[in-house]
Length: 434
Image (cartoon, rainbow, N blue to C red):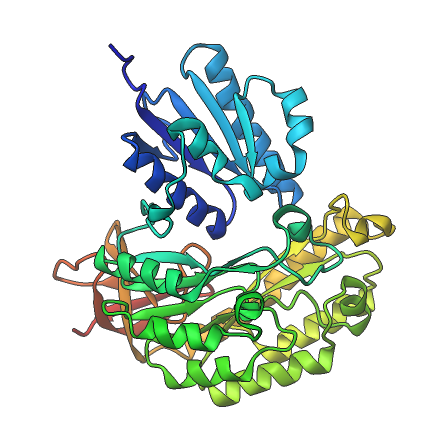
């Protein structure tokens, strides 16, 4: 007789939404092979654990290592039988990890993501290539449209980890989106290392606009949200589709990283300050009311106080609806690792704080302009006295929420119309209209 929990697998996923999609594909293969699945569980009798790691920046690598060590200890204590590590960290540091944490049964990198399935099931079934075991709430899912990146920014290890850009064939993506819609998904969040580069390797051209149009035809999908758009050579036809198609949210995640020409050149971003300004003007003129989300990298080698002040002024003038910031940390093997990391750690952290303090005041102003407005929202959850929803201007996990008062019970995953009644820096308050 099999031990209790022997056919149950706990899949623990760290890092970004792209990792999450990888885990969901793996889980579909395991489920078809007869395994029962837990996801990110700390309270399970599963005797097999798979840890899908992140290896992008220092904090993420540290979290991944700590997670592996905790399960290695559990294995030593007899609480689990098998431990597998997959993903970015094991792609880049497999040899070091095998030496340092030999308790792990096998390491598989992102370029051999099928390996753990072959180990446990004997084969990877191509007929399940578009199948997923969804781990997000039933009403939204991430759709990863490509793997890898060709840009080779100076600070970024992604090309070293995930390799060159490889697009997923369009017909596979439409099939996957259709299956998600049939399971109840209403919001698709399109992700990749660079979504705008989609199709170049398969079709000899950027085909994101065509893909978005086809996704809009998938019955049951009501919102399509676009993440991680590289600003260099941003395709005009994508702007046209976003402006024309009602299903595409007026929202764009476009990491700019900096605005100082000195820093952009050092970072190898292949765009200058004027190009960034002109792109933002094009987006806002052709897609009125678009919410722009960006990410800024501060403390990169050579960043002067003048460079940083230029960035602050750019953010002050542009008034991004959503903005995140992180401090530079050296990644071995990248071009910037050969540069002197000459911005002190306390200066880096101070600059992050100053930038986010500015963004807080700008966000408050943006939100206050919404008071009195009616908007369509989707309900994500219930917390205390409020229903928690999001508008088309907000992506799950990373953006603000709407706290909705309603005398009647609302249904999670359904759309409603609300009126904004109050605003603070990073949240809106609303009442139900219908």
